[in-house]
Amino acid sequence: MERRSFLQALIATAVAAAAPGGEALAAGRSSLRYLRPPGALREEDFLKHCIHCGQCGEICPNRCINYFGLENGLASIDTPYIIPREQACILCMKCGEVCPTDAIAPIERELEAILSGVKMGHARVDESLCLSFQGLTCGVCYRACPLPDVAIYVARLEQPHVTDECVGCGLCERSCIQLPQAIRVFPEYG
Amino acid sequence: MAAPTATTEPATRLRRFVVWRQLNKLRWLILVIVFAMLVLLPLLHVYQTYTAAHAYDLLSPGEKQLYDVMETIAAPFVSDPAEDLDAIKGNTWSGSFWGYKISDPLAALGQVAAGLNLYWPFLLTALVPLLLTIFFGRFFCGWICPATFLYELNSNFASWLRWAGIRVGNRRFDKRIKYGVLALGLILSAVSGSVLTGAIYPPAIIGREIYYTIAQGGLGVGTIFFLATLLFDILVARRGFCRYLCPGGALYSLLGRYRLVRIRRIVETCNDCAKCNVVCEFDLDPLRDGFGQECNNCTACIAICPTDALTFTLRPRDYPEQGPGHLGRHYRGDGEAPGEADAAP
Image (tube, rainbow over all chains, first blue to last red; front, side, top):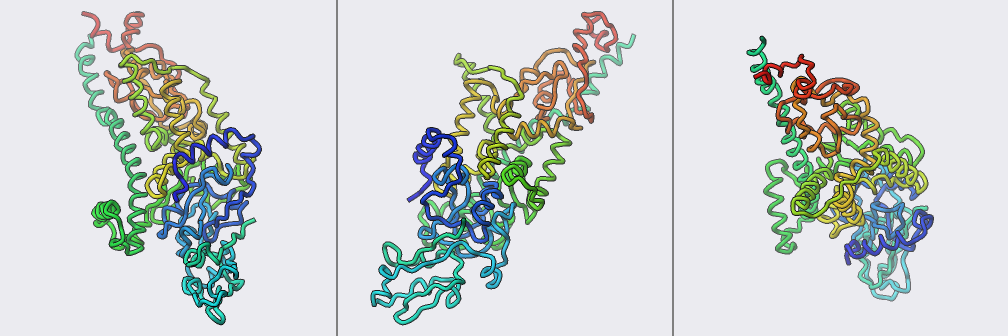
């Protein structure tokens, strides 16, 4: 469950030391699916700005912000990430307030500001997994969404449909009662 | 002759510097406070998340204990912990106090290298430490750095080892190696496009690792690096990392090259006992007026000097070597030192 066990770090360091220097340095995308905190710059600019101080995680009241070791490459070391299925963002916008470098832009906690400023990712429904699409009315994701009827609306049998307004906070993925989850947030960095 | 004045003069000097002799204790107090804050802030953060979630009844017994202790500590200062405790966040790498943000100059420099542009809103947060460093030199290294706290305890540990008959390292290297490490860190940042100076900089690592340990459920990669530096200090060179490898130390040495506040030796009172050279963690040479840009004004030499021959001065450069102190002068037969009267009978 915990990604940051000491042994893991030890192995990761050994691997990083053994890997050819160029490869370890490359900021190349790993296969991990993670989100950056709300208001974060695009991935490349984010890495250029972030000084890895850890204040975003330290102010996060939801403790959804974790920090990379070496599993996402050397360039991502000690940068914040969110795995929505483990703990999703509640859009409190405190991390942008405390960020000293504006790698996470300060955004007011208002509907308009969040809709225009936050783009962590975009949720997608897997209709073959979603209970509502199997005829069992569920609607949990719709009720978990902080922007109901803006980012997500439900049709017949509580079938969820995500709109373009979705900011990708991941609360729907966190709350999905299916295993594996039928709604996932796909990050929009790049 | 001038016998009466000669006997009274050291006594007046002693009174004059009585406060400065205590500065080393004050420094230790500050180091302990900084370190304790680095432990307390993540604990308060965890407590804050519990209050934000109104989760007291759901906590395990251990978590409840943490909640109660933190509530006792925080209660006199805050009315709404979930919001009010946001006032102080961060660590010595970058922190915020009631909205005022302050960052390490090395973080600013690393960011400039990573992005190859100047982002002023952030760079300005490093302005106050920068000005203080230009004025006081490497004061951060001696007075604030949480790694220094552990490194000094570590070098005490090494002297116990030495006392027990175990050989500890006392090699010497070129002090300029650390400028190479600084350059390497900046080049790495520029090549990778990520601020990597913080990954090889112990105070930043310690702030992060304490936070990871308390609030993120485990140690991170940096711990291995830091343990390696502790071993380096024991096995290879006393305070070797700070003196030869630390990129932050390199930056502050450069910034503090013409610092105004420095320590000087009063040659008339110095009795050449060389205790200052022994106690100096950075292996400087106060006995021969050799402080240089490495000196972090830690005042350990002032505290140990038996004759109060070390004091502060405001000068952009060190005094040139003043020669041996009054005993040496007496034996050389210069005969000008006030100590002459003492030695005459």
